[in-house]
Length: 274
Image (cartoon, rainbow, N blue to C red; front, side, top):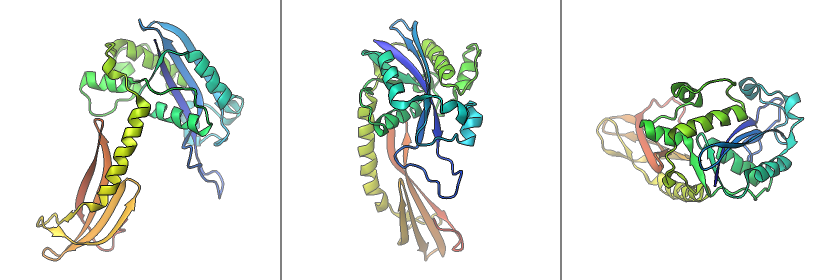
């Protein structure tokens, strides 16, 4: 079994002209895949680096362009996604574990495969190298790749925010922190399905929370409420304290668990309530 340490660069929506709008089914369009293939001894046995021609967000977002130094002229010469991902799948092989720095890249890879109807890449074995490092160092905040590379004294011979360079650095970190424990390999796709069910369950409960007055601690009747995606807003007035209360509940994710976090705050009636 081989470890595929990969990194992606994306382009995303930017409103260049009046009337432009984002595609709700694809937030981040992959424009570069970089990867390093490691064998079971964590020896490098292959490299992959390919630019991908965007078809949804064809013009480079200015922020992305500055960050990754890839302009529109260069990216439109890239390989179409289906051809690129077929090449990647052939290079990956049959027995593999996908590995990346955090969850963003595997999420975007899955979204792009779904959008372009490519179903030959499997996400049932995944390692989050960032999480391994966080567990090792007992960190609660996600560290940036650059700071970890510097902290582990890994030679920085190529620029960051290039898919292949970042995959190379991530592979170097992987070598230093991986203990070959099977516990770190997760069925990513199964976990996503389970998380989606948890979120839907919490959405059914989020508007049942109560408002409490920060002044006296007593329950306050709801005078109004609004639900927006993973957030719930409610408003009330504590007669006893003569205070207007704004309640906010949100679905949060921390250490692998989803939960509802709530806050009650005093607000002035002339404030915007949502």
